[in-house]
Length: 248
Picture (cartoon, rainbow, N blue to C red):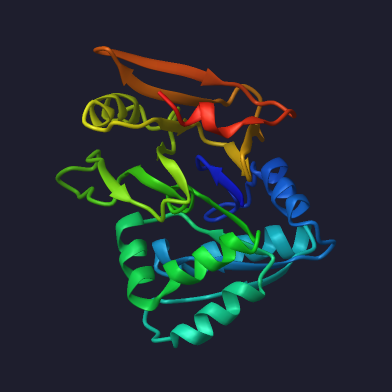
């Protein structure tokens, strides 16, 4: 299993600014290929043209990947073709956007089953925001936000490859912290919260934290004996055992 969950950040989507390069280089390195095949899934953003172009510039133009893009919105691809394209990739990158709509579309088209096969084959699975929630059992998501409730957050189910709840944008969106605290009071497991420009890297039974901007961190949060615990997880080059991280 190779998973890189990113808490969010600028990758050149609506401006030329890219601040995720250190994380993106690690994504490419972990693939073990000099010029890996990267398949971008922009399902959560409904195939946003600017987002697709930004990922292509970053990973093809700068990092030497062979980038392909798989759209599910306004198309009706065959499940067999979806699985073929996913399993041909060395890296699957899942974009930001509406997690709930993404998960529904994936289950409708069989993408969830194809991604499970990709995980078993050690294809690199990565993504930002919604693309980080995808790999976890649950996520703290803004999928239900509206003009009337722009800060509404809710628990959304992911693919469950990592058995924890994950919360992106932890430092930038100030309502995330109290939302996660309240959410975890009803959740028996552990949460991993990620600042923007910070990633949790999971390789088989170990993990480490990587930040592309100094000072960004991850956190481990849970309730124990009526007390809310939030431990900092600092960036490190060293891997640690995953099982204690996910245990209360």
